[in-house]
Length: 194
Image (cartoon, rainbow, N blue to C red; front, side, top):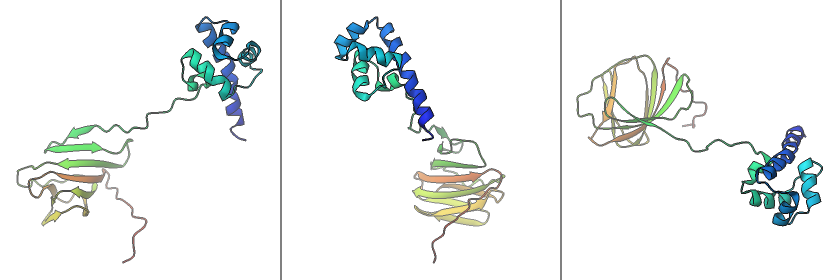
């Protein structure tokens, strides 16, 4: 029942829209009746708002006017449901795609790490990082620890700890990364029991 006023407002707009379309196409009620098979009196009542529009009346009108049915009833526009991701090159080689569409403390990225071909250059900065290896073998250096992670393995660390990561075997590595610039950590709410 809460949507009744909204639905009535949409229906109230159909009549003037139908009048405008007929005028735009330069059609008389008689000509429109001949083209649609709908009686002149029914068309007149539709355009004056005395008759409720129905699908069986609106479909022939949409065909004559060459407009989608949504245009006749004034359906709201729907946003594009496709997600358009923009890859960005990483300064150290590879590609990063932001998976987070809004600014906030935690940001998610999908990265493809290319072979950097160099010795690890450890760095520090504010934040907290969590990463998960999708494909390939990732070499992760955290202070004095030198680790190799494979698909399905994850790591997390405070980025004030000296760190570096890159390909462990010269082939690209695909990872998911969650990064909190202010040191925000992920909160695991459900864990399987061991």
